[in-house]
Length: 547
Image (cartoon, rainbow, N blue to C red; front, side, top):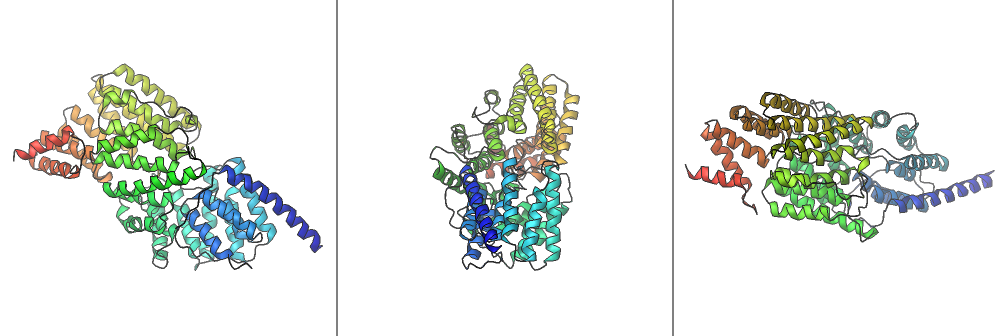
């Protein structure tokens, strides 16, 4: 009987190795990560080296280096076929809760096979059994239970893990991640995020070089009222895991929230370079989704400092991308946002008209919500440039993309596209001389945006709607009302060039010269290292020279 079982195990493992080999190759997982941080995730194994190898693979998993983590767990199953938790790691590598990437049917099949193999080789402890059951709760019945419900099932399972094993810090780390992933963007109490942050800060004191702890603290506090709480973790993460592109990028989530533009740019330069190096070990022709994601944040930062020449260099790099290691949501957002940001932040309405989705061979049909960024920019630019007919053409394209996003049952992004529809329509109404209707529509868009929050893929709105409301009120000769909107925008999106410039103009036009002086000073200070002469800054210097 033992011989039969051993033979069956050998056959099962052979089939497993064969199927996983193709999975790893398909995932473009070439490229080694050296410094990934310190993890001490205790597991059972008869092989002394297994613990260290498992810790290293889990460190990569915690930093969302999913292909590399998957390969490391796969390699571990080859060296230690009876390590049940290595199969857990493979199943976890297909679960991306913050990114909200729904696993493909093939990913689900592979993950369930990994879970079956974990059970087959023998799970040695109740704790490991519960870890494997927790991720199984996510994958079970994926053909009949929708993705958000399955994520909630995993959350409930991890909550039980934390209660059942109160001394297990790794359970707390994983629970904190899914708490942030399931937190509603409309919940302005930030209850789940605060709970996650409190859990993580307790274990941070014990494990200061744990990549998952600092990573998930940043995600937990990636909100305007909470961002200061994440600054210490942001300062540490890139030092803990400097080989991981995502670890180098993540600090910028806090830097952007706090308007620390130079810090944001520096960490994303490092992230983009690391991402490109990693992607090109698989294929020299590759660009990197990590690099694109970092470039979007860099572009945003450069534009706030009026470093338009540097921003243009990034726009040109993104415009030259033809092949990407992963055509995922982060790549899609960046490809659409980077050129649109460059035109909109500089208020170059003629440049906006020439925007198009690039590259043409990218699967834009999968990302109608991000294609909407291009058409919003074109609609806004046309309306503000006085071409009402072109504005309406692009608004209709926006409406079509909104419908497609609704049909995909993506409520968050459908709401975001609806905001863009209303905003573009408001500016078209203003161009038609319908000022009162325009203000009402623009205020509705701003209120809708305030009721939710940005997705982690974005450094911020393409243009904050509250800022656009301020612009529209200025155009409508309502400077006092405009000033209030610019200041409300700055309370959420700190240190933004256009909100500061708008507040300065509105204060000056309202007769509040002291407040105008304050904002003009901020603008000049913000642009102390600019590489471009912008009219707003020249106006600020002229105003200050009058005093």
